[in-house]
Image (cartoon, rainbow, N blue to C red; front, side):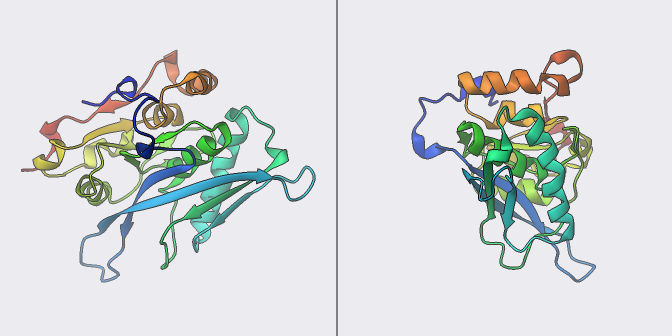
Length: 232
């Protein structure tokens, strides 16, 4: 089992990156019959001074469809509220890597929000973590599709810890062998995402404190999926 405290900033730097994250996506076969196949979806973010005075914005590239563009707008509400920085003074550049066929849907919302906050706060992200999940403007993680295909892609790629929406926990049907190499946690809020994806440091503690109102009762709500939910 991998817990947030198991990973600290003294780990080899190649396994920790600021403004870089592993998302998970699914490819639609387009036949109406075949199952989805999962893929890794790397995303990087960079912060620069605002091009226009008091005109900070998020610039996302990677052939985003309409729903994906709306997801960028939704996560901006969470970032503005909890980043602890004046976003009007910066432009945030978000790049989907290798999305030559384009990106549709909002299942990368928690991934985008996390990598943007990493770039803003300069808190490294664990590179052995991957995630998928939608995010509403109040910081709640919402369910997405094709979680089993995405998780199997993550395990095959060597990911050690995967984060999925709480409401998708019942949908997971991965084979037992994948549980031996990768832990799967369900997350209910964006605070849960930060707790598991960001490297432990003083800045992370400060960020988690700002995000505390998202979690009812003030405690973590992430839960580990047990092997009993898997298929042999």
